[in-house]
Amino acid sequence: MSQSPAPTFRLEQKRHVLKDFPGPKSSALAERRKDAVAAGVASTVPVYVQDADGGIILDIDGNSFVDLGSGIAVTSVGASEPAVVGAVAEAAGHFTHTCFMVTPYEGYVEVAERLNTLTPGDHAKKTVLFNSGAEAVENAVKIARIATGRSAVVVFDHAYHGRTNLTMALTAKSMPYKHGFGPFASEVYRVPMSYPFREENPEITGAEAAQRAITMIEKQIGADQVAALVIEPIQGEGGFIVPAEGFLPALAEWAKANGVVFVADEVQAGFCRTGEWFAVDHEGVVPDLVTMAKGIAGGMPLSAVTGRAELLDSVHGGGLGGTYGGNPVACAAALAALDVMEEQDLNAKARRIEEIARGVLEPLVGEGVVGELRGRGAMLAIELVEPGTKKPNPEAAKAIAAACLKEGVIILTCGTYGNIIRLLPPLVIGEELLTDALGVLATAIKAQ
Image 1 (tube, helix red, strand yellow):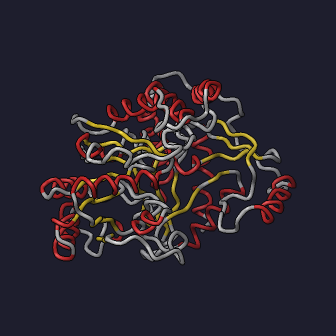
Image 2 (tube, rainbow, N blue to C red):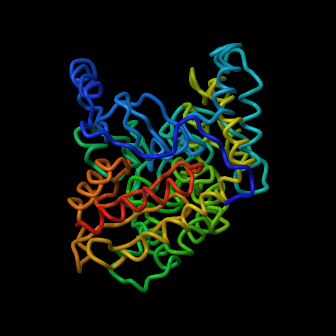
Image 3 (cartoon, rainbow, N blue to C red):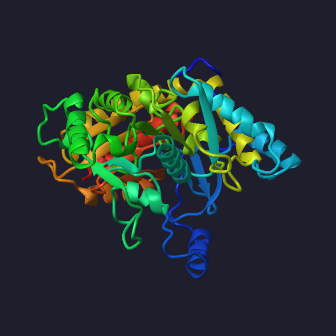
């Protein structure tokens, strides 16, 4: 890992699960929840959090779990990083809100300046801030449409972009995200993704897979009708799908040649998660617009669209914004989190996490239920299949997640077919704790 000093933690970085898990306090809260919280809100783990620090989540009954989910790639710097906590307290002590559209403040401007510098490309850039990843994606589409005067938006198989009406239309997976919630926004078109593990032709290159999508766009939509092409450089909920090398550059080149706004949805993959600041950096792709959220602010709600200045400035005054967008406390948290990422070289730590994980998990590939191990940095996936086939095995994913939880390790599943284990540990997790949790996971996999 990086040569920077190792972080110190308040909580002991060790898993410990009591025999009565889930404990009585969590069970009592679960009963209260039934009467108070909408049934449509589901939780992966049946315990309630009391504290979280480093790679550990402590529940209200005294169970300590290794966190390999980071609140879905949000707490990359840890769930209680002192620099973020201090920045939040300092900011909240002055003001929690004024609305940037009414009485602006420096924090918003400073976050925009940092993002303009960090995102790919040396062209002139500008930024607008929001609250959630879905808001960022939706506003990127708005910007692309007004800048181009076109309406069509192209997205990909297995994509996930959010839960608003427009972003549900952009999202590929029906259950649970879209089922019963239509009708959805119009002028959204879906084309094939590069999914190397599941390609009918295993020899297809990234450039050829891109041409397959481009041909469909040109035949069925017309390039001159497309405002934006929106893609996750590594797909998230769809299964941590890493497209074949050359896929993203070919799409970006086509978009540039045809006046189409290339939008990189870096909501889950951004901010050191893959071992680079952004996932597109692995192939040198420079998007027109980048959407960001999750890891940006150490757990505080903040999102952004950063991109070519002329695109952002094509929107009329008042056309972008929102009451809470760029909240001052969230901006302070983001500035602190970005400092931590730089000072602790979390890109290097993400790459080291990948090295450790591959050392434990790669020997399992092709054996039993493990079809593929893929991903970059601390954004890794295990695709589970019926032994000897490529048939998706969601039952194994559920069983492995349950077995890990019983031993004190929280892992998340995902995928169009529900057969993916995704690993998203905090980037500050200690090597000893990570290795211990991976050992639990490997044992659970071998038991299938």
